[in-house]
Length: 192
Image 1 (spheres, rainbow, N blue to C red):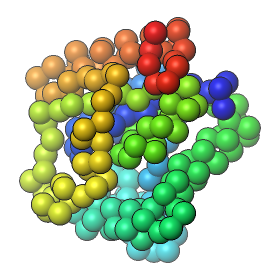
Image 2: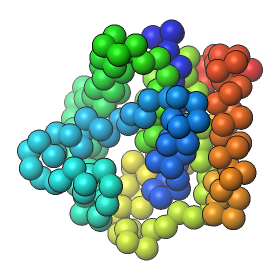
Image 3: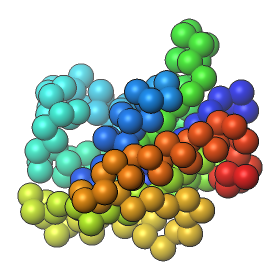
Image 4: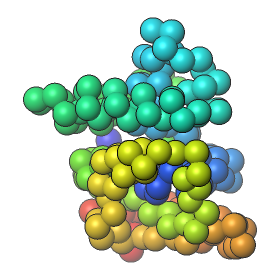
């Protein structure tokens, strides 16, 4: 998939991943996609939650169910660690071949195998560090779930502080990284 441009965003809950994905999409023409899209659509199709609950309001019980199904009920099964990576790769191939989409931003990078897959496909992952991480409505189990902490000690090559006070500066910093990536390409997740 070397002909594609892939940018991943990694961060904690409520750190601005969706917002930054939207910024990259609107300013640089990237198609927004997520590892969790396939899971969310499956749960909507089985009538466990509504589209609005899965993609917009994201109430506490929805986040909890997504963590449970996505990790404990799927990724933890023997041989299934890459299930969500494989699903996303298939969707990217569909969008590329059907619609000629070549630029993708993945707004929910949460595990090392996801980072590695992006790097293997000559993409880059940006870590958003934030002082606005709101965990008021989340349980301690949700904020310490593996999907929230598995990348805490990962050494990201590209980090942006995404905080309330300097939101515009954060957006500029991310767009500058995107532009560097588009101009120069990436190798092993590093922008030259």
